[in-house]
Length: 246
Ligand code: 1GP
Image (cartoon, rainbow, N blue to C red; front, side, top):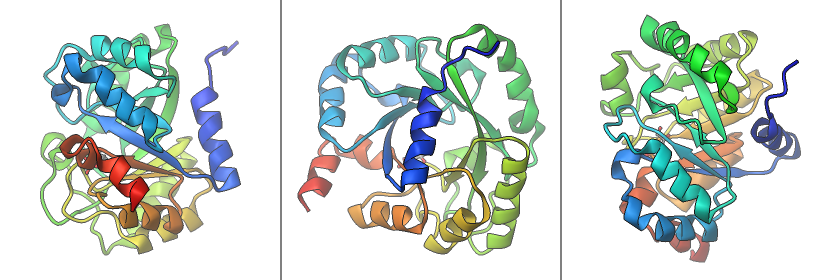
């Protein structure tokens, strides 16, 4: 019998059904100072964030578990792994986005990493959320593109993005992560989010290059259930205070 928790996914689907907005803060373990976690998390607690994502395309830090343990001392928000590769799996997180980079054609990111991590994940208590990960061209070369050696879907090619998301849904993925890449010059377009949200019946996460209140609002209005903010908060710990007071 499968007794694994589905709490995180249930919360996301409820938000999706009720048209509620979720906001994730993405923390890159390489950029988190363990000594500063208490104050960092205090800022997150004061913000509209509903989830903490942790991970990155490449992570050199071997402190992920320590960072998560420290985060959990100061918040009840769910901590969800967003791993660039299996080395970023930490047993003390609450869940993991089990990603397949469906926009690309690199077998390592379509199946090899999943095979490597499956035995470990089966033994863990992590909530596992199968997620179709689509990288969209963003006006520059992002770390995801460089590291995965995959070609993003063109910003103009909405049909390909839709078909890829639909394939992801039919393969059993529970979420679509529409990604422009961390620090992207251009976020995923309103038109693409809108068309995808009309074409699949699972929640859509949108991230990459969103750095203003307007950008966040636009993603929600276009159909995103969850928006991910990484760089904007990393560069300015007051980011959420500023958008709340705008
Ligand atoms: C990256 O979508 C996330 O995977 C967040 O991107 O760092 O540009 O906010 P930013």
